Structure formats: C-alpha cells, structure tokens
Image 1 (cartoon, rainbow, N blue to C red):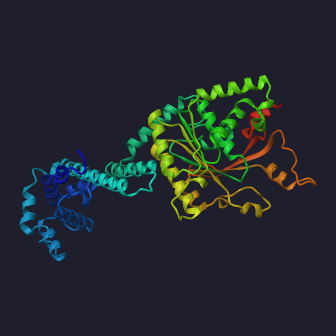
Image 2 (tube, rainbow, N blue to C red):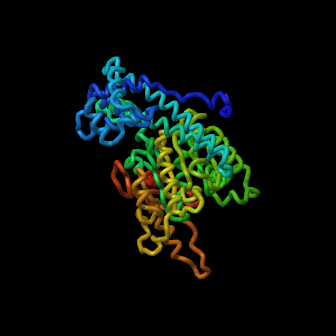
Image 3 (spheres, rainbow, N blue to C red):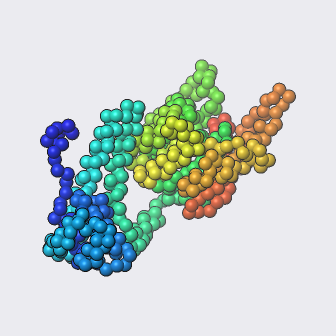
Length: 465
C-alpha cells in the first residue's frame, strides 16, 4: 500500500483504549501496579491525551511518596486545573471499573507498549519519507544510515531492560570464562602479534574502542595493517580495513611486502624484478586471495558511510572480527564544523560501532605538534587532538614511539640528508597511556623500516641469538 493512497491516509493509528484504561485503573487500585507500569511505559506511550495526563500525574504523585487513589488524584488534578480535561470525576470512577484484575497490569501495559511502538514506527517512516523527498544533498548511504538510526532508536527504547539482578549476569560471565579457560588462545581478544602488549591488554577485545596515535611517519598505518593481516590469517573472523590515506593498491603493496619481505621501495621498479621475486609476489597475492580481509579506500567517508558499510559486511559475513579505521582525522564531518568537533564525532561514531556490531575497533589518529617543542619526544595524551574527549571515550589509548626516527631527523650530513635507515630498530616502544580495565606502561618492540613492520622484540632476539 502506498503512503499517498487515500485509504492509508484515513487509517486510525494503532491503539487500544481498553488496555490503556486497564493500566490506569490498576495504578489507582494498587501501588505495585504503578511500579510495574513505570518499568514498561512512559506517558507518551498512551494514545489518548487524557490518559497521558493521568499517567504522568500518578507517576508524579508516587515519586513524591503521596498516596495514589481516586480522592488524591482528583484533588491533584483539580489544583492543576486538569480534572475536566481528563473527563472529570465520572471518568476517573469509570477507570476503576475498567480493570478486570490489577494483577494483570504487566499484560495490559505490554498491549499499550505494542500499540505505541507501532505508532512510533509509522512516525519514523514519515520522517524518513520527508527526508527522502526533500533532502536532495543527502548522499544515498547517509540517507540509508539515518533511516536505520531512526528505526533503531525505537528498538533501543522499547528493548530497555532497566535494572536487573546481578546474579544472572554473573552466571553468564562465569560460563564465558569457563569457555575461555578451555581455549588454546593466549589472550581473550585478537592478538596484535606483540606478545607483551597482548599480555598487558588481553588483545583487542570485542565492543572495545582502541585509539592508536603516533607522529607522522611513525608507522601507525603499518602497525594497524599488520594487526589486521595477522587476525585474518589467524581465522579471527572477517576483517574490515577503512584506508582513508592510502589507496587500495598501496595497501596491497604493504601487505605483499609484509608477506614476502620484499623492500617497499622495490614496488616502484617492478621492471628490475627477477623471476624469483615474481614467484614471491605470486605467493603473497595467492595468500591474500584466501583470507577474509576487506579494504575500502574511500578518501573522506562520513561516519555514516563507515557504519553502513560495516553493517553490510557484517550481515553478509555473519559478523566481523575487527574493524580498522586509518585514520579518524580524515573522516568527513558536517560542513562548517571545526576539526576537533569532526574528530569527536568520528571517535564517538567508532565507539558506537564497536558496541553495535560487538567487534573491536582500532582507530588511528594524528598527534598535534606539541611534542616537537619538547626535548623528550615520547607522546602523552595531551598531544592528541581533542585529547580529553578521546581519553574519556576510548577503552585503550596507545602510542608508537621510535627514538631512532627522531635521531635521524636531527642528524643530517652537509647536504641536508639523513643517514640510511637501520636494518632493524630495537629501541621502539608501544606506550599504553590509558586502559580502562588494565595497567598502563611501555612495551619494547622491533621495527623494520624496509617493510615498515613492527614485530615482537622477544621473537626478534630469539631469532638473532
């Protein structure tokens, strides 16, 4: 049936006045009925305006610890000059006779809630229709995402569980821990490949937002891509990488370099490759074809676009294992907003996405230039744009720090050139600056410049004894 069908326009909105009367009458008769009704309903769940006023009045009286009965309600409505609005004293009396049994208050309330939800869906559909008709500047995926958010808001509102006893949650958690104890995995979350970091954080855990911040050219993209690659190769689920800074081809080059050990610089001169290098590259490409790793290289997506594409992939793949966003400073916000506000929106969007899709989100961000005014270049939380908001919102904030990088910046020859990169830097660090449920601290790591790869320092020492 089309929305502009005359028959549709004359339909009466879903409602059940008898159930509304039964709810209100039960509340007048029994105090426990007020508590139960409040758990399930709000005043705007009632269709008739008079019922909205009566519900709000009784809830307000109960909140002030006043007795709620025919006499007190009538008096309260008289003081507020609303008695006649709700139908007068005769209507209040009729409500008492409209209750088959106050013990069935939950049943009556759920009928009212069901009808209210249907009305809200109709109202949301009207909002979506108006948006689709009149907002010509809205991009298709943004429009679809706003429509989904409108409907999800209704779902979140009606599925609220309120306060529940801690016991069932504790039992469920104990069962979860029991299952984890039987696993051969060293960490409950997705391992990064840096064992000391994984031990400190438990890996990248579901529903958590991880913020990775570092200075320019510090290798944060390589670190994140390495984590995504390890997760995909380790069968940790489908991995989504949003590469806002590098093209899909550049991401492929990085991954082929990681898998084969071929120097990144060699990708600029494939005409010089020997047959054995072509064989190495074919093996690397073959492995990439087999793993569940997806890459988007949209250079300036909105939060809505990232969310909609993640949802779509999650539906198609029956869930996701990890989402990587490189990087949040390039996520496009609304026009005329300053950079910090855009960043705050992006980070909040990533946090919501982690919880909605039950997946860890690793989001990268850039540092401001404050650290260049200090002798000690180790980054701290205040070096991040919108640092107070990010520090509050993220579950874990960590930095990459390579003292060799800054040493090369300050050591140049007479031609203004820096010395050649070392084969491996063994003085690099991961700095865990904030962890909501765990310790802070520094983790030593190895960094290989030719592949831009971070690696486990203990494994490197083991291999180079």
